[in-house]
Image (cartoon, rainbow over all chains, first blue to last red; front, side, top):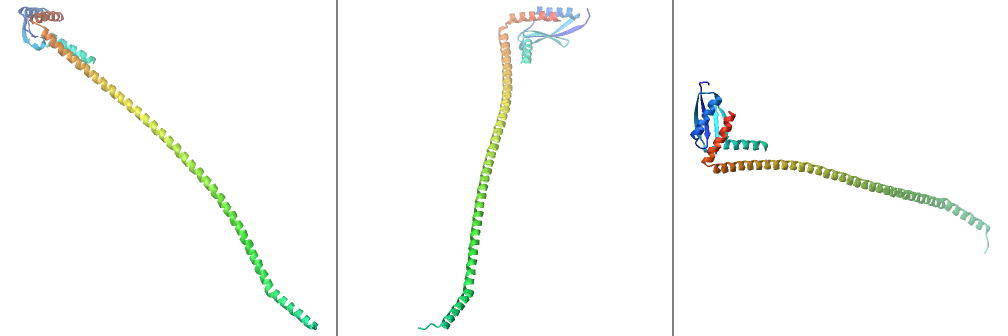
Length: 79
Length: 161
């Protein structure tokens, strides 16, 4: 394991539970092989639901707003 | 009464002289005048006949000219009618063609506008549906459901990492 530190931005519509935070840190440590993970939490009700992670400028969007936006752009491109 | 031969002879001579003088001085000039008059009358008659002939000829020519004029007039009228008919047909044909083109253009324009309106309506509808969906989902998610949704999405993200 590399002894590096990684900062992750976690955006949700509601507060994360401690268990969820723990899961996120564990998963990122494992997948990115880092020793320390710092979470920057952002609570944004506009996301409606779900979760969005931003790691090294890469977004993993699992929010309702993100899915609806994706659906919207797909619909608009077909019209 | 005695008959005197000398006297008779004298009277005969005298009468002959008178007849000769009258014949010489009066009869011939009168005859000449008559001849000249007859000639003038004959000339007048000839001139009248000639004038009559000329008049007939003029009348004949006038009739021919009138007939030709009538023919020419009829021809001009017929030509004008034919030309007017052709022009009318051309104008109608051009107008029809122009109308056809304009109708086609209007139809295309209408089809384009209709397509644009439909597209806009579809977009508006999609946006409305998405907006309503956001509202409905937002209202439907309580704290527990929101937390479950985070768990579910987090699992997918961790798989994708």
